[in-house]
Image (cartoon, rainbow, N blue to C red; front, top):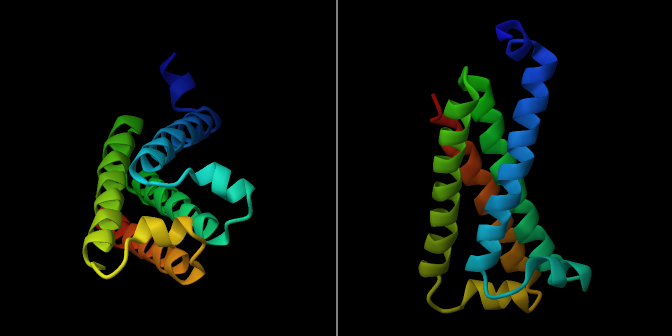
Length: 135
């Protein structure tokens, strides 16, 4: 049975499955943190929310990429990816804190594309910083 788990196809499917399921959980947590409903806003054509959510999604997946690349076990990858997600979430909250003249969530929810773009770039950028430190 040991050979089964070491098969590259089985390992790929396992990592893929964990990444997809964990990403759903992480996006649900982001949904709880924001004041707007991501998927409802995207369905209604809110490009700012789509950019911010897309940046979060890319950030999460990019951290998984680094985690899978630098860790031998699935459990280590999940641990590093969870830490990376917490750091992404913290970055989003810091972005909100560092802009006291506006409420980021309200601006994105109201369709402010410039704020949505900045949110996306922050998520993507932070994912590279976090990913570079995964060992």
